[in-house]
Amino acid sequence: MKQRIKNEGYCLGIESTADDFSVGIVSFNGEILANIISAYVPPEGGIHPREAARHHAEVADAVLKEAFEKAGIKPQDLMVVAFAQGPGLGPCLRTGATVARALASYLRVPLVGVNHCVAHIEIGKLKTGAKDPLTLYVSGGNTIVSAFNSGRYRVFGETLDIALGNCLDVFAREAGLRPKPGEPLGALVEKLAAKAKIFIPLPYTVKGMDLSFSGLLTAAVSLLKSGKYHVEDICYSLQETAFAMVTEVTERALAHTEKREVLLTGGVAANRRLQEMVECIAKEHEARFCAVPSAFAIDNGAMIAWTGTLAFNHGLTTPIEESYVKLRWRLEEVEVPWVGRMTQ
Ligand code: ATP
Ligand code: FE2
Image 1 (cartoon, helix red, strand yellow):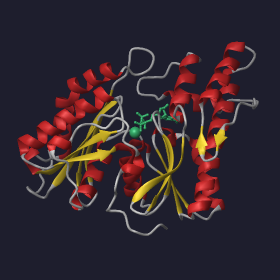
Image 2 (tube, rainbow, N blue to C red):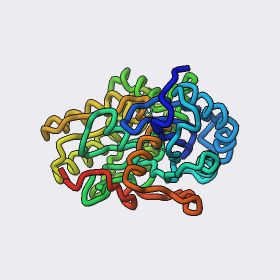
Image 3 (tube, rainbow, N blue to C red):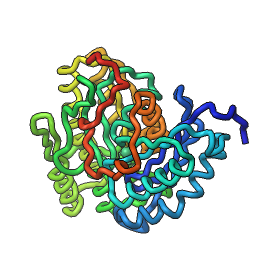
């Protein structure tokens, strides 16, 4: 175990919005000392919130211990405890919040409730060096195009129904694809798509700046059930259509905001084809393309800890009595005083 200087001041962050329970420890200058992730894998089908929450409660102790060991610090070295306060699944969020409250009260350090979507953007900025990006955040639960303007991350476009990652996951389950342990379903769709021979037209739904994936999913599943097409060709057509939709909205937001950087984050950011498409529009607009490294694209405690340091440095803390979880906490409701006043 590495020995570190006592009272240097660290922030511990707890992430538990959905299927992962994760603890990250960071220093105030952005060094990530630990980022331990324990994923709940349902025996079959999608995530059941209460089952996932039970997993989080069971592993919390071991994940915390492992994070302290990895970081080489003691609980007494913490200056602040941050936790994902929302948005997310109620039982999962409450489990993480309970652990965070207990730890902060025991150590007598302040608590900071962090918005999960803000944290995805902040860790993306930290890991890629982006200063003021237009962000495409695509995961199992979110599909958001956003950029900073007048004190907040504004939402320029988002899904009206299911998220992009969820669309890929449900399709993969319907197709009976079996991932290896730890392999995301979306990555399996990506692998099969690479072997495709033909493109099959599917519904392309962009409404203004918003997106809809449910009709696309239904159409892709019915192609599957028709038995007339190879699964590889359907995976490819689904990916091309869905990615073209998010890329179109991202490009329009980029043209409107004139940002000089495009940041791709969230679990689906790991997809090479999506990276290629977003990089292409970034180049056309002479913006720098930044993709978050996959360890930090997925849900992780380090992003909560890092955002916790930014908020804490600006005097934002969350009293215990206000630390209730916010299941539908929207990105643009959050003040981010640590981001500069400039819009580009
Ligand atoms: P959030 O709470 O932010 O919505 P999440 O719980 O969905 O996040 P993430 O790890 O950010 O968790 O994203 C998981 C999603 O990313 C899944 O839908 C998964 O299939 C998808 N994904 C991961 N790798 C790839 C890939 N290579 N191609 C496409 N999708 C991928
Ligand atoms: Fe997430």
